[in-house]
Length: 226
Ligand SMILES: NC(=O)c1ccc[n+]([C@@H]2O[C@H](COP(=O)([O-])OP(=O)(O)OC[C@H]3O[C@@H](n4cnc5c(N)ncnc54)[C@H](OP(=O)(O)O)[C@@H]3O)[C@@H](O)[C@H]2O)c1
Image (cartoon, rainbow, N blue to C red):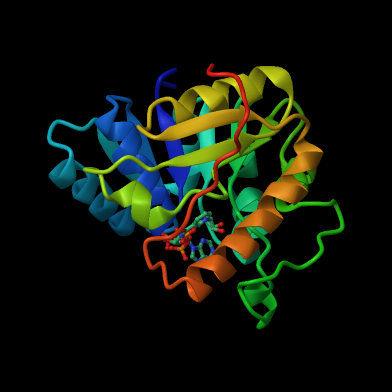
C-alpha cells in the first residue's frame, strides 16, 4: 500500500473522475477503480492527458481497494451496498472509506430533488454497517459539483462538511486542502451525514430552477478563518 495514494472506486464516472483530476493535479498518487479494468485504465489515461506527469493507475475495484489508506466510494447510491459487499474482502484494518453518495429518490424511479429514507439514517451509516470491523467510515464531498471539479482552470468554491470519528475525519479534511476553493468543515459525528446528504437534493433543485448546469455550491459564513 502507498500511504499517499487515494483510491477512488467508480472513478470512471463524473464525480470520481473530477476528484481524481484534482488530487492528481495536487501531486497525490491516485488509483481509479472500476468494475471493468479497461474502463479504469481509460479513466487513468484521461487524467494523465489533463494532468501531465500524473501518478495514476486504473485497476478493478477489488484490486484498487488495498492500494491506499483512503478509499472513496464514487458509485450511485443504489449500487453502494453492492459495491461495498464486493470489495469487503479487500478492505483492511485501519483503512478509511469515504461515503459520498446521496440517496436520491431517483434510485427508486422518483425524482432527484428529494431523498429516500435509509434505515441506518444515511447512506454513510449504511456503508458503516457493511464494512469489516476496524475500517472507519467518513462522509464527505456530497455537496461538491462534478462539473466544477472537472474544470481544473477554476476554483471549486464550496464548503465540504466532513463527518465521522475524529482521526479519520481529519484525514479526509486534509484531502479538501488539495483542491483549490474547497474548505473542509468539521461536521461532527457520522450521523450528521443524513443532513449533508439531504442538502444535495436541495442543491439539485436549485440547479434546475436557476438553470445552473455547472452546479451550485455551499458556503457557511461566520466561521473562523482556519
Ligand atoms: N455528479 C455529481 O455532481 C455529484 C455530486 C455530489 C455527489 N455525487 C455522488 O458521487 C457518486 C458518483 O456520482 P457520479 O455522477 O460520478 O455517478 P455515475 O457517473 O453515474 O457513476 C459512477 C460510477 O459508478 C459505477 N457504477 C455504475 N453502475 C454500477 C453498478 N450497477 N454497480 C457498481 N458500480 C456501478 C460506474 O463505474 P464502472 O462502470 O467503471 O464500474 C460509474 O462510472 C454518487 O454517489 C453521487 O451521488 C455526485
